Image 1 (tube, rainbow, N blue to C red):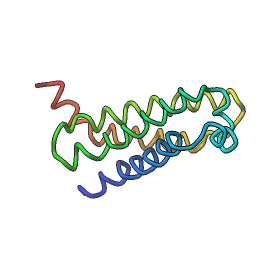
Image 2 (tube, one colour):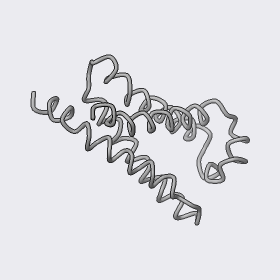
Image 3 (cartoon, helix red, strand yellow):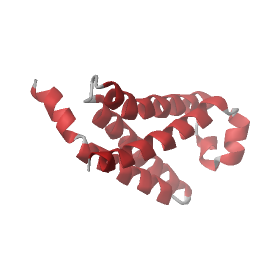
Image 4 (tube, rainbow, N blue to C red):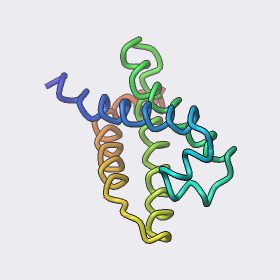
Length: 125
């Protein structure tokens, strides 16, 4: 059962590591041509989103692997869930598909739920 808990966490980490890296290391012109929503944001904002996604992906895995600061796992998932809510609003306003954002949001919620004990331990100490 312990391994099953890692599945949504690993899926999220991979998804946001790739998405964050893509936003960080792809030119703005290429981003706009591949991600139509990117035209609504400045290059700096896109890089900031990418950096936050990249850092949060590390926050999903490293604390659990290193057995240090486990409360960062649910906090990272909370941050990514909020990011997905904002992205859903952006896509709805643009009339674009947003099903992948809903899937990622659901994965975030599952990680928050699975790792909520780690958050309580930190808050309660």
